[in-house]
Image (cartoon, rainbow, N blue to C red; front, top):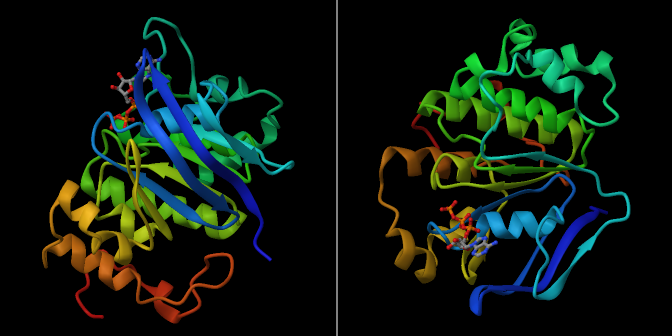
Length: 259
Ligand SMILES: Nc1ncnc2c1ncn2[C@@H]1O[C@H](COP(=O)(O)OP(=O)(O)OP(=O)(O)O)[C@@H](O)[C@H]1O
């Protein structure tokens, strides 16, 4: 049976008397990719901070599996550009890291050639991969990714989402992502939770995009290219760990039009 890693139960938070999150219920299980969407300022990062224990909820509780191990990828890397720091040394700073895993992890993410590069000269997409490597070196069973494709062009976004899906398939970990991208990410998502102070709607991408609350926030999905990608992806059959059972993983779907 699939293990539940985290459950938010009636989570609420208020700052200076202003309610930001109210009665949030959601959960993430092993092998599940959950994407949190919502307008700017709707409380997505705050919910992540509560999960990480960086922010205390005003009400409700977070139930964590006793074996929960989180690998966190922040929105941005804040490092003093005058500080000389190579990718290898940056990753060696991960607490309890097995240093022998640094190179294989970078290889897995296609950035082994950057091991001796200075972190402050990396491109947006390279930086995101280094941050993902750091999260993976924590040997997580839950990956928490706050806007993982920020600053990455569309092709790079597709590649990063493919990588994240591949990691989920390989490790069987759960993934909680925050995203502003509504279409590309949904192709890689099992469950979407749309928040705007409270949970507006949640469920499969198909369910959520058809929901009036989603449509009120983001508009009615049209028959554009991105939606075509997303509709195609969910023609697959997933096994209990989220792996694809059909033969559809023998080619990529980002530019094909068949169903
Ligand atoms: N510690 C705090 N004290 C007061 N207000 C806060 C605090 N942390 C967050 N906020 C406010 O809560 C609101 C939501 O912030 P949050 O970063 O969670 O939103 P978000 O959904 O992640 O937004 P975005 O999509 O723009 O990144 C913002 O208006 C922010 O100013």
